[in-house]
Length: 147
Picture 1 (spheres, helix red, strand yellow):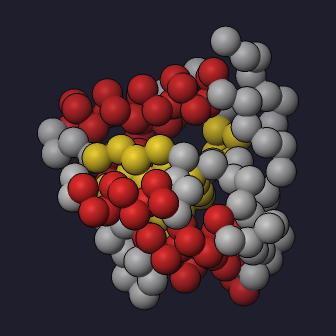
Picture 2: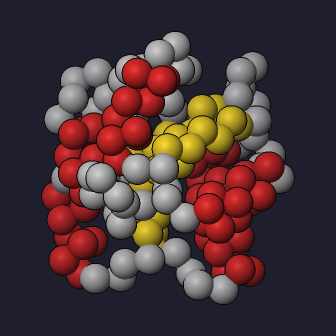
């Protein structure tokens, strides 16, 4: 296990469902590693946040992205493709966190270099368990790039 960072790990959640945002926030508040959850409600906003543009000028460097596929304005796979094709962003791990269990979505996400693909459980307890497992691996075991 690694030590807590001096500064919180910056996580960008790209999610348009207020309920899923609340559940994710709740799950990460109890994380053993300090983290700060930032939220983008659509794909275009996510890219502005990551690139520190528009209303997100001065945003902190993101260490980890949790990305839904079903988003307004720009779909999650297009966001993933833009992140992984941008030399300034491609080092950021992206976890697809979505309700889709469609094999085509899974395959396409990995072809676009997603670091992991997790299907959101419908039940509240299962959703919290899944996020706890993600938190344990991605925030405690894995060494994330500083920027």
